[in-house]
Each structure stands twice: as C-alpha cells, then as structure tokens.
Image 1 (tube, rainbow, N blue to C red):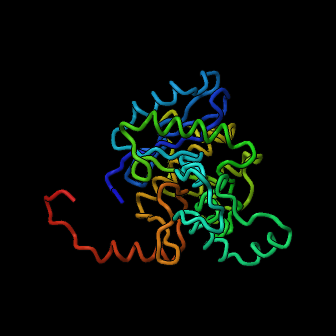
Image 2 (image 1 turned 30 degrees about the vertical axis):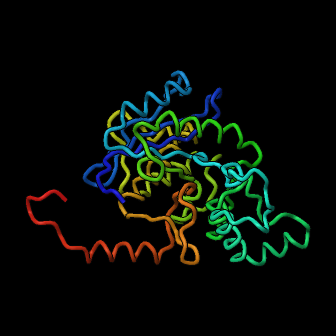
Length: 285
C-alpha cells in the first residue's frame, strides 16, 4: 500500500443524466483529513460526465479516487470462452472464489438450494459482493436490479481516468454503508439528517475546512456518502488495508470493494508497521 497519498476524492456516483452525483475532496491535515470541497452546491449544475472527470483530473496530484459504484464487471461478462461449460464445470478463478464464499455460508446456500434458487449468479455478482455477506453486510449485486446504468457509467469513468488512475492503486471501489456498519454505525442514515451530522462529528480525525459546512451533508445524503467514500480511502491508506485472502488464495483483485477489514487483520497490519525498521533521519521514507 502506498502511503504517499495526500488527497482522497470521494464520488457518490449517480446516473449519467441525473442530478444525484456528489463529489467530496479530503486533504490530509495534522489531525487526520479535512474536507476541502463538496460539489455540487445548491443551484450549481450537476456533475455530468465532462464536469465530473474535469473536477477529478484538476485535483489528481497525490490523490486516490474512491467511487461508490461497480468498477468491474462480473466474471461471466469478462469471460472469453466461446461456449459456457456451465457453472458446475467453470474453472474461472473468481467463480471458484464465489463457490468457496457460499460454502462458508452453508445455511443460506442450503436454503437457496431447497427453494431451487441459484446459489450464485456470476453474470450479476462478483466475489466481492458475496464476501460482504460473510461480514454481515447485505450487499448490492453488481448488476442487480437498477444497477445496470450505474455500472455502465462507472465503466466509462474508469476508462476516462485511465491515463492517471489505476484500479486498486489510486482508483478504488467503496461502499459507504458497509464502511459505516463495519465501523459500528449500524443505524439507518439516509432519511435521518441529524444522524448523518452525529456520525461526522464522531469521526475524530475528520474535520471541515473554511467555507465547507457539515450542514451540506445534512441537506444531502449524496454529499454525506461522497465524504464517506473519501474517508474510506483515507482509512485504507492510513492502515494499509489489503485484499482479503480466501482459503489461501486472493479473491480476484480485478473486482474488490474496499471496506474496513476484520479486526484481527487490522491488528496484524499495525504490528507489522511497529516492527518495521524506521528510516534514517534526513532520508525519504
């Protein structure tokens, strides 16, 4: 994990022709990170594609872009086999990971089988979607109901930023609700403006800069989610999150939703940092 990131750009992505896209910029500060931009403000033009890409690229120096939308497609839609052998015979690495994840939730998989319901659908799901279920998060499906247009816009965004941003390096997929739940904030917040303000106030290393108001997150849950997207990227960089291993093998890293890891993983990463040799004074770390 790179520790040179100084800026975290959160994007709560909405439909390409809608008005719900929001962007937040967090810059590192002495106490953590400070919100230095929320966009769009009331009465400003929506962040359609050109405006969104322009806003990101103009702030790309030392930045990680954190997007609340699928940045990769399910394995079936990436498959190059001319004829599908069927799920049972499929040897795609991500499909194998999906099977392992379902077996770890045996009660749910047995219930689905009894009802005749497919246990996995690798043309609508990714392993990362199923992994979140093992963490107690009811995750959206990558191409579930209503997600198609959003996934298409996200795919366009990945290509539009491709010259400067690389997936799982300085361009990551996040899920604000999962971040909050795994940090211990499990109460609904979408329709509870005061709850959103309470959550922001409780994040001790998050502050708001001059001219940027928490009140905007009270008025817009999209602005709030954009801040949480960027904050997730900050936590990932600060704590050195890694892609989770499953049965000794990494879940396919082409598709991964970055969320707070298991507590044991966090403590292990902190221990590694503590044990690492300190750079000599005057040398670049």
